[in-house]
Image (cartoon, rainbow, N blue to C red; front, side):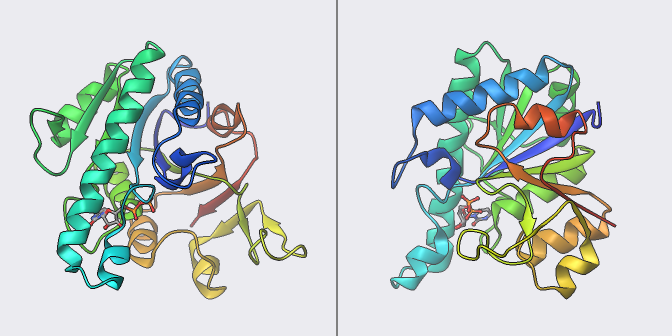
Length: 235
Ligand code: UDP
């Protein structure tokens, strides 16, 4: 195995499947199956989930809503997604804990780093909801922060594209994919991997990022076993 402890970042939009909004139960079940497959190999899995399928603070702010209010809604959206993923994992007989950065004690444990690590050591999948708990941040930043805090070996950013390209592959047929790239080159070339706050936090803490296609069954296991799919960002 290439990694012992991973942090998987899933965007909220990924949960929509073919829908325009919300959560597609089939997609959720597929993700749960993927995660189950790697836990069965003894890999410790933490997950940070976004909320873009339900609400984004900037979207609210662009229509006149107070940004902080909108971000609070976005953070709660990530808790909703976390609950949905937890439920799908439990249906697949995977032990899980949901920890929230925003206190919501009847619904999720509060984020306590030592507890999270202990859950991981016991083989439970730990889902981190509520982002960082602060407005003006993203769940990519939460993913990097939590990965560093629980000493994950890597961030696996599951997306619908299969890696980092020199141009947008969805609009440009000439775009070519990088197998690996340095943090510096991502910045120099102005490529979009994560928002700048998240990206530099990862760089400063020497935490590699692998961007890969999460919608192809078996890919998560492939990445974890060291198969060269996706793009690795490293020092
Ligand atoms: N959010 C926040 N602080 C955080 C993480 C998220 O305020 O630390 C809010 C923010 O409004 C964001 C929303 O939650 O737009 C959903 O998160 P994100 O946009 O990162 O989700 P994704 O794009 O991954 O679905």
